[in-house]
Image (cartoon, rainbow, N blue to C red; front, side, top):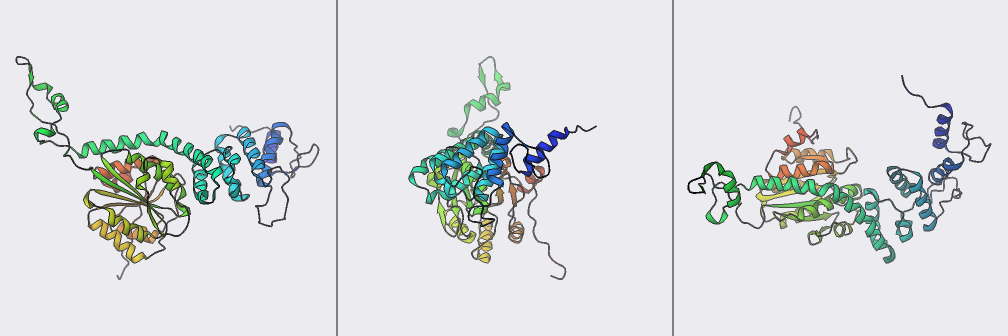
Length: 406
């Protein structure tokens, strides 16, 4: 037996959904339900957003009568009201709708408004896109908002990535025949305790355990980020992961961002916020140029993992881009194409290019942040990315099958 809401409660919910007059005794879009008290505040907050035409749209040329106003103080007061009335997740949805529906992007340049923002990935991306037109008085506040998003992501994602990558590096650097200077005596003793000689109080090692061969780094990782507007959330996550990887001494990490130009942000990896504010969201896409730059900076192809994070819509020379991807693979670089690195579900991407990549042996798929540590661990350990993806239920782009008669 299903529980049914009382009829009055159903009318109340319909009234909040449909909107309408709030004065006592007034009809409300056919529900004949009026609101007061807390419900009236809820309704006014929603009306300020959803009962108005977007700025500059000309729809009905209505004035704002619900109190949102066209000034930063008015919007800041409205945002503060939202935080009192609605759960945090709902506030984020309403904020995002306000930016799109009411044309509030320019108002986000005001410090007093930024102080009322509930930080989330989308809001961080919006502020990143506005950084070049932001007055100095708002920049520091914007960085604080983005910092709160970054700190939250680091708290949730940093340790899983460090653990996964460190574990794969430890497994990949086994040295069962170490030279004298490479012997790990502590682990060697533990491994050979069963050979302890009580009479001489000595462990006679049957098997030596050694450190990996000393070298500049075990793996080189290049994160190549498409900074077009559609990739905004992916860039935020990738910037955080890039900084975490850079903190691991056993890997050498480089972060490269691109639109029609290429910018190397590797010198800023000590602070994820610096990475994000070095990104210029929007613009065109020249994957060919980005891969060309990566070819130049890769020094050890067989020890390099290149993660291209892009929707693969190429605005440059597609034929040359595919040739560069093939050359990287042939040189021994482990190339992975992430069509998205976010929680937004199935991305829009160029299926034809993804299929061409798959035909080269480059796995192409969308990946949520929770899966990224496992992906990197598998790649570093030299595992089969396709098999790993299958165990996670992740669908990979497939190579185009040869058509009959070809």
